[in-house]
Image 1: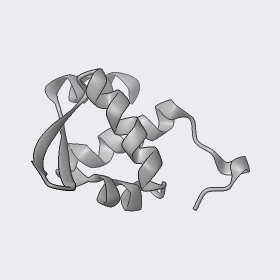
Image 2: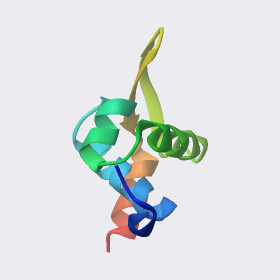
Image 3: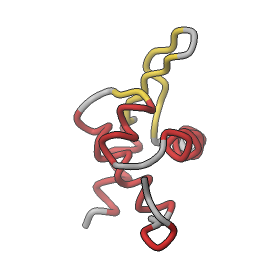
Length: 82
C-alpha cells in the first residue's frame, strides 16, 4: 500500500495502467497488483481512461470486468513514452 509521501500522479498511474494493458487483457484487481496500487484507485483511473477512449471494456460478467487498451491508447502511450 502506498503512503502519502509516495503518491503517484494521475498521469503516472494512467501510463502504468496502459503499459500493463498493452501486453494482456486484465481486470481491475490484476492491474492493481501489477502496478502496486489499490483497486479503487485503478477503478477511478479506468473510468477516466475509458472516457478518453484509451481503454475499452473487453468482457463483463456480473461483477467481473476485463479491460484492454484501444488503438488510441497505444498511440497515446507511444507519444508519452518518447
